[in-house]
Length: 335
Ligand SMILES: Cc1cc2nc3c(=O)[nH]c(=O)nc-3n(C[C@H](O)[C@H](O)[C@H](O)COP(=O)(O)OP(=O)(O)OC[C@H]3O[C@@H](n4cnc5c(N)ncnc54)[C@H](O)[C@@H]3O)c2cc1C
Image 1: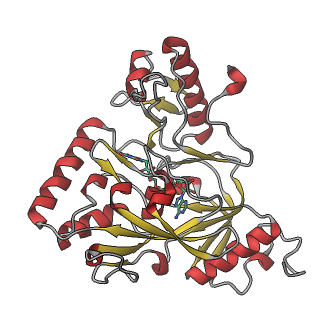
Image 2: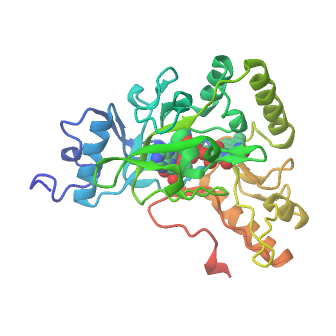
């Protein structure tokens, strides 16, 4: 730690001085999430290179300033009180490029030409479209899932048709201390909406296995999956997709649909202030335009307690909540 940064707080320019990053203080990030509600980040930084991100991460680690990464905010609720520390946004070109024509820099098998390095800030919707156009398979299962690639890896996003894990070879991360490291997909123990990313690591790129395929077949597959999502989910609502993880029956290992449990408890349409349970899909908790993130959190707690009382199932939150305090995944205080 340099003497200059020893006592820095997030809002202290010493933390980012000389770093190639656009920095905004008191930045309204809640409104750019899919809920379009909630508060500000004390500091929002848009680093322009991996080196800049690494240096910022190092300074934050040295000074104990929290560092978070914002993707598309498609699985994120930012409470009105906002978040402390530094939030980074990987929307600069250094983090959004896909090297469709390159081969893996470290080929380990004779199919290395099917591996594409893609920046973690890349828009997943756009990647699915590009993969269709370029005749590369391996991403159709992600059709209709709003995310950056980094956010999709972090959540192991997916659904009935598969998840990002099935195409993931390895990732590049900036560690808590600011070092660049490569991690093999197997080390991440990817599972249902689960990824064991080492604490404090920020995904900066992913290497995906995307074999060449018939563009028409890929197009048809993407179309089918997208239409299925449109039929079964309220895609236009201000939500973060499914609020809760599908819980597992510990005796059988079987997963129960959280949406069904909410529906069977009679909670579709339930409201708390500006937040409501979708009539179309019980696991989608949405908010009115101009509504409050806090209402969504309160509603999620009501739903958890009502489902527990009705069927005995405990629903854990899938959506990440940012605030100045830790927000437990289950409202123990009400239990
Ligand atoms: C309409 C709708 C439909 C959806 N349908 C699905 C679905 O079918 N399946 C599904 O799985 N999800 C679905 N979701 C949820 C969401 O799309 C996924 O969870 C997605 O992976 C979130 O990505 P993001 O970039 O928006 O991450 P964010 O919401 O911005 O962040 C989520 C978490 O990931 C972390 N994170 C983001 N980027 C990085 C990074 N580069 N490195 C490390 N950590 C990072 C954040 O810090 C945060 O903890 C849906 C959401 C909506 C709004």
